[in-house]
Length: 321
Image 1 (cartoon, helix red, strand yellow):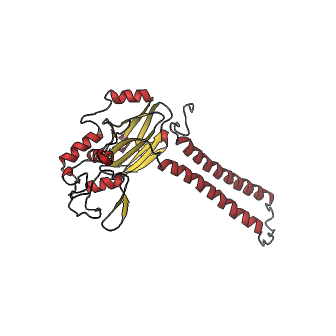
Image 2 (spheres, helix red, strand yellow):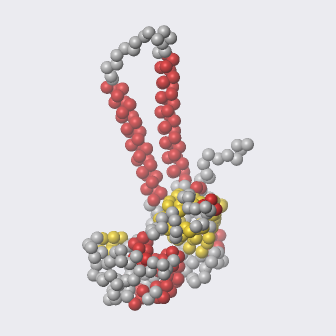
Image 3 (tube, helix red, strand yellow):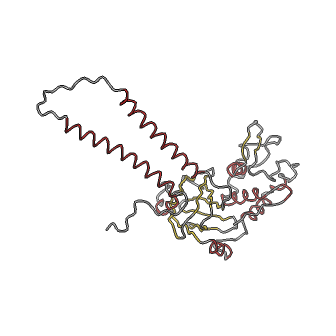
């Protein structure tokens, strides 16, 4: 009956062995000390048992080596686990420099995914094997949690801000995707499938119109929205408009009117679009209207990709798939 039982989900990413080794290491260390305690308690209870009830234990004055031992051994063991866990944690949260970017939005009760080339999917995610993939996501309503057990990646989708996970798939196949945060009556139905494909098959899927591609790539949709919302009238490339130039702004350090310096990442750009009065660039007035409620999360992601594509000299960076 237990022939198909698995203690852990299948390992299908480069991160999975690291996470499992850490987990098994902590369990092994805990079990080792637990067994020692049980064995010692049992041994001493039997050896020094008193059937008469008349014996009086000898006074104990203490032992410096013993006290140092049971203090230092757990201390260094805990420090070792902390260092090991920190290394794994930084591998999980720090994506490589060159990743395949995919945007996602959690909504009761589905996951929407947008590929840079324009493909859109619902509760399905197609990715290539052997390539780092970074999924940037948020929530449109309540707290959700994007969880792919076979890849050992999991993070909350928080309304109003971006979260991100990354992974590099190592096995072709289909893998479960879950919402791991209770989000309402149909929470258990907020599931999906990750399809890991060979590189050639993934390129064929992209070129064959896999997913909905209406409106072109995300950069093209973002450019159209940038014009439609009249952003081009204020954010001039030479910086002479009422708003700052957005050429090369992504990833740069931006000085605000209060003297603070922030990094222009996805979260900063999203906040600037939806809550424009929250932060104002130094040297510019608070004249930008808020687009909260006028642009959905897919539109915000497209605007961000368009801004990321703008480079000095009027050139554009093409998003490599």
